[in-house]
Amino acid sequence: MADRVHGHLIGRAFLLGAACGGRSMAGPAAVALTAGPVPARGLSGTRARRLIAASALAELVADKLPGVPSRLAPPALAARLVTAGASAAALARRDGATAALPVLAAVSGALAAGVAGARWRAWAGRGALPPVAAAVLEDLAVVGAAAAAVRP
Image (cartoon, rainbow, N blue to C red):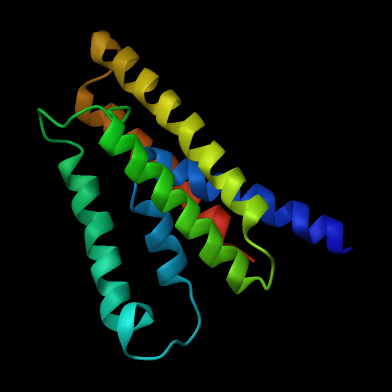
């Protein structure tokens, strides 16, 4: 039974990382917004949850703006990998599990989804879809992955 639960956590961590590969703040927002009661001070408090959620919403809007750098540019990709790993570590902690394998799964998911998302947007940019429509479809996939990842 423990192996199955652990495998389930690794799959959820991969999905959480994939969400971060699409939108870097999706994973932290999903974990923060589904956490149980927390102290009202520090980074785990209500203000921090609101800040993380606001950052995720701002990223959803900013992603649609022209001139946004590639998600595969080193700083953007590094941010996605870091938020994926941190989100998976928080998810593992919440589930009472060690974080090493979930973090590895999340970073792998972020890398895979980052590349897939960049290819999706490049394909859509060749006239297959209007850019905003492609971005909104990607947003839906990101939110779906993040929501599935934080379900117990």
